[in-house]
Length: 241
Image (cartoon, rainbow, N blue to C red; front, side, top):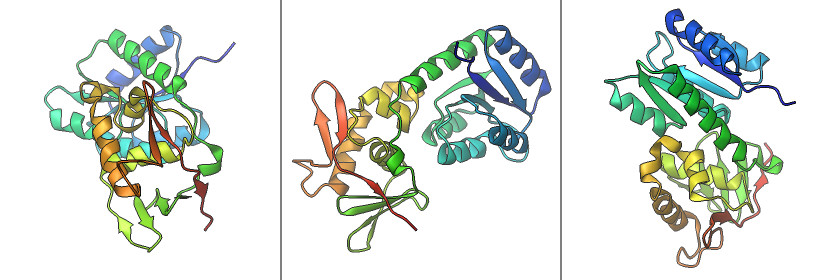
């Protein structure tokens, strides 16, 4: 029997954090809690966490900074808790890779449903290829440096990538040869809360092709799979050093 998913609730308010933890445990989840970024990092080092519920409005390191750190260093799904009036924070949270958000005050039952939905999508996601787990990845005529967020050509010239293009290319190079649906690419780049803009994936692919393909009209690296999505057809390899 598989263990229950492990949820980490990060909120500086014990009045929210502790009752929420009890509710989630009562509904079959394992739960750890943290009052801020320092505790969160400690727990992540010592425990396998399946999903982080993260409050945005916290003193010191806020939830947006912590979400950005999580997205840059892990693939753990993140659900943000936001103040009702802070629409800008919600948008920024989705842009930096949060998987979903819920506004305060919220119904714990709705949060539980969102947690389960995000976990189902994460479990259905194709795994990354072990061979390309490093920070610098070479494919075709390019070197993709995920730490510096750069794409460098054979001539040593860096090609600028938008945040969306960076995430999209990262999803492709770490899953070569795997057909990724638009829904999966949406999960990997923007989070399902951006679902109304699902067709934007096609636009992002088009823009990325113009930067990396020798002939964007006849793409050889990012190929369209009819009724399926897209597949990265190159053979990426990790660059040592």
